[in-house]
Length: 357
Image (cartoon, rainbow, N blue to C red):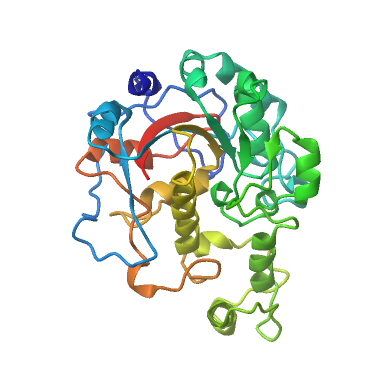
């Protein structure tokens, strides 16, 4: 029953139309409009059964929802994931020159259109079908995802037995002011249905991850805010000592964590590992486009679409060089499902998949 419900989120869709900006907000409700298509271009994946795997970088097996019964019969520890990209945020639309890089979009909120997307989503057939089975809702701690989670699943908000949990691992790549979250105490006061202090979710009060990258971007190479980890210090020094990649305080348009995708990939691993410690089997997740692009494509042929040069390696990630490129997820031989999952996400789009924890 569960895998049939999950599979119902896959339906025929029109050809994908990619936005001019990697985070452009598309003006349509996209839930239940994604499917595997025989006409979709396919890309090969790394054979992770034979690839050398480091001790700290596990690859998690992803499967189409139709495989649920077979995997459970094999004794696999399976989670059903209903992944939703947040609805349209103020950073997704540019008004009078104010876009995703503008300070006014710090921890961007949903637009009125985005809230309407969430309402339409909550009334849609796919959402109505999956909601009764959801046992846990996880959201990025950024405001637009918190709003999306609460507005897309209103019946679960009223259900005390379903936890809503903020998890830092599924936050957006840390690049612009829209990607920094407000103080955790402020978020917890506004979104009191969401727990921001659950073990293993790593939501810092003053957004230490944003500050870590800001320290690098704003440094001239002479002054760094150093931590206690000598390897971390070495990464910071390497990033700032190279004159070709040195960033100054006035250079605010450059990417930060998107130039350190190995660390973003590690966040994805941490999230799946955390899910494996939870008892819930069916989880809804509210996350972000650039994070999802990395999560589903890292380590695969063709790499992460639109990725900038990777000059900030291992700033927040691990320092085991031998398994940097291990995929976060594998797709077995299902190339069509791989192509589907690696495609870009529209605002308020739902996709369902299985992960073996």
